[in-house]
Structure formats: structure tokens, C-alpha cells
Length: 491
Image (cartoon, rainbow, N blue to C red; front, side, top):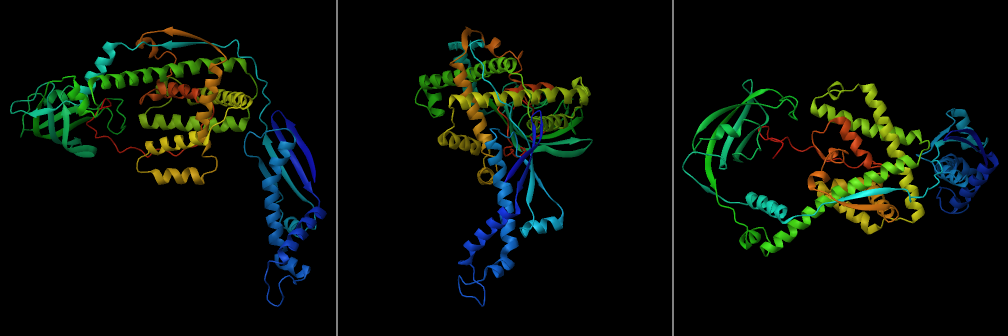
């Protein structure tokens, strides 16, 4: 077998592989000899089929299998023997001439195919001594814990039916039907809907007009949807809601005690306080972690400058660009609304894609050299979390990960990345700094933008740079059923 490099330009490589006809014939003869004792052909005893007849009957199909095996197995062997790693799946090409192909299948001519790929550039790891990060820490106060418990208590409070008119804080149970220009619209109707006046759950103006209603009342409410309402067909439009009040109920007093804890399935108020403290600390800890991670990634981005494989960058850009256009379509906005042009946005997101690919390669190299591994238990736990996120779609999710090549990488990548960050945190300089929760949650670094439903497309994509290990395609959540249009984002 001859291996001839035909292109070495930057990270691009092209290899010509030539397997002599004699070698192909020898491989074919071996396969025919193996098949001789297995095939059953009328008129011949087992194992007594003449080689020439066997070749006539099965030669081409066996040779076709051989060709497929060679183009499936040899590229990775050849690339590995050259001490290279392919950034993406190598592209394989061979003759499309039917006569030439027939000669190859008959072992009458050399079998040639070409391999085109991009190499992952060699990365010389640098010292992490110069990396310094500030870890912001928030001290959880008793007041904050009590405030959170009070919110929990209010959400669990009971209501008692009242005969009088509804006022602020009362719960109204009603049927409603929404219309625009006199025509009912999708998602604008509900029966036995419960709404606490003043909760801010419904669109502005709706709750205010419920003040003073009582059980049995029928009323038409007129409101205007916000200009940035998620459903573009309703944004900025005036709508009417025909409502029928079923019940008005007053809120019972809230008391934080063991009885409340028992109602929530806990043994005592102290246990409730302990759990709430842990939840708040965990929430702050997640924000702290993301800020520290961003600092590390930013400094790694400054440390490592090298050409990135165009194929990886293209794939990453496509993912980002697809998300950006989805966000714009859902919000009903254009690039002009984001104070940019499509050309400028493409340039910006291309840079973002390059950063993510570069950091992904760096983290991969750091992890590999440090012996970072993702265990089967961690993979199973990640899969279980995926199943929890998609209730009712467990079979679909399992089939996806079982049958989609590379799908498991979408589970492994974030786990691997976090373990590499953990490793780096033991090597870099970390300074703890006590801050207020307002300082921690400040959005100056955009860490929180990707969690906001209505974050501008530009900020939203930039925030996702933290996921530098690469985001292989994962099963998408089914689009949630449209919220009842009367309900607002605060629900």
C-alpha cells in the first residue's frame, strides 16, 4: 500500500492511498477461501466448489465489502500513523467511473482513494501560574432565608371563599375567552383559571380590572399586549377578554411554623430553614462558579493563539447562527433592532465560534494530559438528568442516544469540561472576595444573559461562549404548549 501526501497547506491535508491490484486479489482470494466451506451451491458438495466458480458467483460482492472495509478502517490508521488527529470526519473520495470501478471489483487494477481532512493543531501547554481569578462569595443572611421562606409560605397559603367584592391579594377563579378584533385566538381561553390580584402573572392591566368583581359577575376586560410580547401575532395589539367570575377567595394569614413545614412534607420549621439556606447557597454558588469559569476561559483565550480547523469553526458557527435566527424569529425582531447588520453579526459570531473551538481544543488537551476521565456512572447520571428534563419523552431520548453516532458526546463534553475547570482551579491563583448578592448577580459580564427568555440575540450568543468544549447536537425539547395568552412572563 502506498500513502502519498498530495496537500499540506496550513491545517489541511490530502492523502492519496494506492493499494496494488495484486494485493486486492490476494485479499479476495483469502475471503473466497474462507467462504468455500461455508457456501452452499446446488450441484456441489460442501467445500468442493471450484474457486473460479466461487469467484464468478461472489467475487464482486466480496470485493465490494473489502473496498468498504478499507475506506472505513484505513483513513484512521493512516492519520494515526502520521501522528495526526483529524478535526472532523475525514472526507473520502474515489473514482466515479463505472468501468474503472468494475476493474477494481475484478482486481484488474489498483484501488485508489483520497482522504481529505484538517488536523488538530499541536498545542503546547503553558504554565497556569499567571492565571489569577477572583471568586466572589456571598454570605447568606437570616433575613434572606426568612424572606425566601415567607415567599414559600405565601405560595402555599390557603384561601377561603368570600361573598364580597375582590380586592388586592384576593384569588379570583374564572373562565375567560380572549379576542382580537372580535375573533378568538389560540391560547386565549381557559376555564377555572385562578389568579391572585396583584401577583403580576397576567399581562399588564388585566388584574387591575378584576378589583371589585364578585362571584357570578360577567365582565369584558380590554388590554393591550406588550410590544415585546413573545407571540409576535399578538404583540402590541388590543384584545378583549370575556370573563365569568366563579369564585372570589380571601387569603388566610401566613405563619412560619412547624405546621407549614409539615404541609410542605418536612418535619420542622428548622429543617425548612436548613433546606432553604442550602438552596440559596447553591444558587449563589452556581453564579460564582460561572464567573470564575469565565475568568479562566478569558485568560486561556489570551494565552493560546493558534489557527483553528475551519470545519470545526463552521460547525460551531452554524449552531450559533441557527440559534440567533431562531431567537430573532421568536421575538419578531431583526438585526436592525439589535443595532447591527447581518454582515456585522456574522463577523461577530464567527469570532465567537473561533474562540469556542480554540478553548475547546485547549481544555481537551489540558484534560487529556492531566488524565481527566468521565466515568460511566457520571454518564448515566447525565442521561438520567436528560430524561427528567423531558417528561413523557424518555423512550425518544434513550433511542436518540443509543442510535445517533456521537450523541453521547453531548453528555460527556460538559462533564469533561467541568472536571478540567476543577483541575485548573487547583493550579491557578484564586482569591476569595465577599460581595453582596447584588454585586454577584450584576450582569456586567453577561453570565446570566443566556438564561433570560428575552435577552437580546447578540448578548445571548456571546454568553454561550462559556460552553467552550463544543456543543454536539442533543435532542431538542418539544416546544412547550403556548401559554394562555392572558398570562404574563412572571407566571
